Image (cartoon, rainbow, N blue to C red):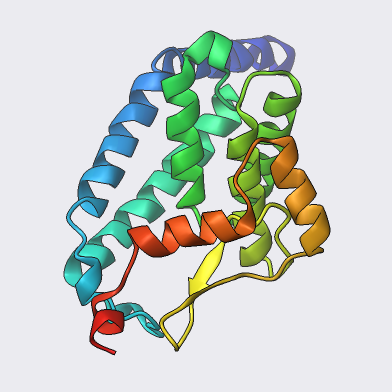
Length: 204
């Protein structure tokens, strides 16, 4: 009986996965739209720059964190069943959506490792842009307490100035940036500074 049931169970699981994966891009799009709709409502001037507890955050930010956790669970299931989206199969939008959602899965280290591995393979195969790998590898490195490789991550210090999170080696970071056609560290830092100035810093 076991030998008869096993193929049936495998077929059932395969059919279920196929049904979910057929709708892969749409599911990613819906989650991303909710993610961005919430973040578009953030008022950065009301967010304490050096928050130590989630309870200090505005309600909309706390709500976003709840959605992030649910999106993370769904993304993990989708990646496990369907693999990482491919530009040639699912389209550029699905690839971009999965990448953005993965960046907000800060608490799931296992998923981060899976995503980083998949993005690396996708870039090598020409199925994903290299800047997605740069941003994601830096983000996960900093979360893990490791140095970043591309210089994409900055923090607002207590003097209300942006400073880069630790590098492995500044010369190597700049070399990697040149290879992917990015601006210098100084230009990148200026762009971030010009586009994000906290209200408490203006008053300082």
